[in-house]
Length: 280
Image: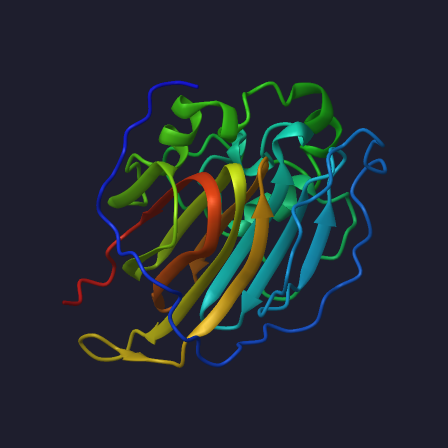
């Protein structure tokens, strides 16, 4: 394993009590994208529960799963769940680097697949994204299996660092932990763009992401009750990626990420977010 940067910041302790569950609509039966996952594909990490309900679930050829979320005002998100043995993360492909959830759905869904309400094509969210603006729906489906040659984030310090630990537009802050162990809680605030990656190398961790929505009205807006984005128990080799983009009106969120009940675990965690609006 490569030499890793270690961050000593962070808060240790048990997971904070969580607020109300924020449902985001009904799951759309979208079926599978492309071929049925190969028999040799590694299983997904064990999932305990998930508070938010995706509006669409796409299963990819290599066994990875994409879960899309949408709220009318607050914005859209995509959660990718996978295993290092399945191959590289779709959301880490160069063409989709820092693309919005809408753009990711358009790229990996079969042509003619209905786009769920709230997931509409929007302008690129990052000047660093290489995603073409004029591709037809599903333009990435046929090439995903053949061209996923980038090392998986869990086996490449460089890839993980570039994806979560630097600050290209639209992000202006980040926090990363390499070879972390034990119960950990950390926060990122005032985000209208937020990206997180977690990879478990050894042991098992219980991982949960919660957030508080903030209405942009007024100098600092006002907060809505805390909600759970997802809850997982992840064993060695499992990883998750989360991308959230604010909706119209510059809604923003404060995120809290916690790993608890960890025993003999070693994991990498990285997150990037911006500081919009400028609210102290």
